[in-house]
Length: 303
Image 1 (cartoon, one colour):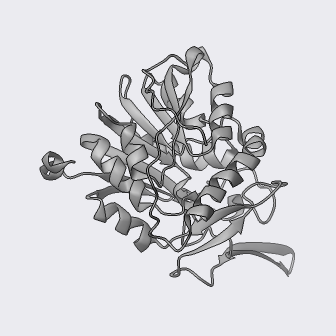
Image 2 (cartoon, rainbow, N blue to C red; image 1 turned 45 degrees about the vertical axis):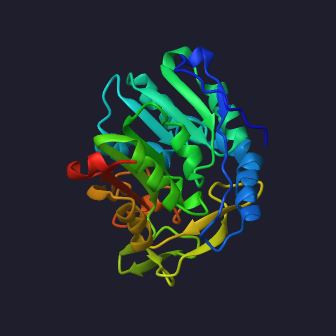
């Protein structure tokens, strides 16, 4: 993987560039090896085209669940400097740019960054793209050298990372006092590869009733598994299930407190589709959106 040590300045979308961030030697604390860590990035390089074509500027899942909660929790303002961690094809980075934010966005996949650049237009505002490994704390910190961020967002990506503690630590060091880190993940209590969506129909006298639910048989154990997040995905990618306590422990150990959380579900009047769609289960949230902040009294001890 070719690396560049040259930093780019803020650039308008029409001149957007991708910069490789210098990588440090990795000492993974998870059960996965460094070689496996590289392979997860290669997985995303191989499926980037399919995801970009299917998701574009936002799937129904993102537009109806992830974006509204993230927008409320982030409450981004024009001229804010915002870091978009694991930005994928840049759809939320562009959303922020159109609000007038100055966005620094990064992803570990070269192909995803290329897709993000291709989709970014002058009307998308000021966006700076980088290729960086979110599990490499030093590489993420490099993005904040000489500057701090008003907010950081990570949209539906932490479950794709081999380990999450490094990005929490890096983000904690890069936020201004009282700045927010808002992240979204598939709800680990319900939305896992091992959860089973079920549907029943009871034909009563003169009427029929349908019930839709979700069966979960394993939750507390953290485990990696192969996932196909989209229909017809050409190959699976590795997803890492983590319990709520595992996810929040990384936040607390990095010095964050949680001051907001939403569990969005599809509203009952959503146009119904497959009986196995989350839209059929308006009482079960498939997403969790969390807002973390560093306590004001701890802001001076930032490294």
